[in-house]
Image (cartoon, rainbow, N blue to C red; front, side, top):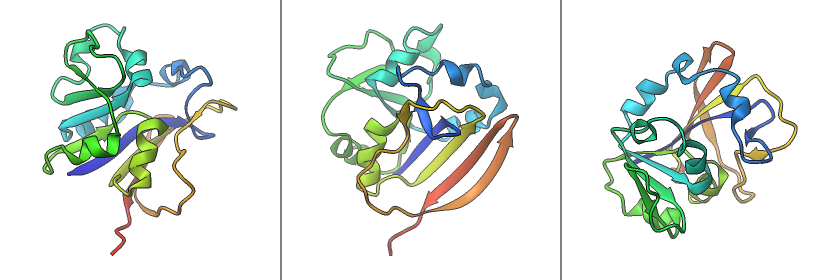
Length: 173
């Protein structure tokens, strides 16, 4: 099993604005300018939180948003009423440990889902795109416990005005 984070932040490190909105990101560029399709093709599973799901659920053709992956949403709601998204609850670390070890898992969500996985050294790679925007305040990408985590820079790419940094976990052995 490999666990990936793939997402975009503002220059000052925010995943969303203070109201949990992504308007600033949609106004900065589009997914067509990135290597998103190639990344997505290699994923088997997506995992996100309810706030992330709420950002996409009303988009046109949301059922086709992640068509080839099994898509889990951590929420207390028993049913999401959107085809292709499965409601789950509980501890994200325990949940992921139950997924088939041959699967690639994309953490779509931000710090609520990502932080416990970082705390348990479960994130193998991070694809962090940086948008040319300063938000000043918002929802930070990283909020894991205060503990040194090392990654190595594997690749740097430019997509229009976006920079993409690809990091891989430094093994502890």
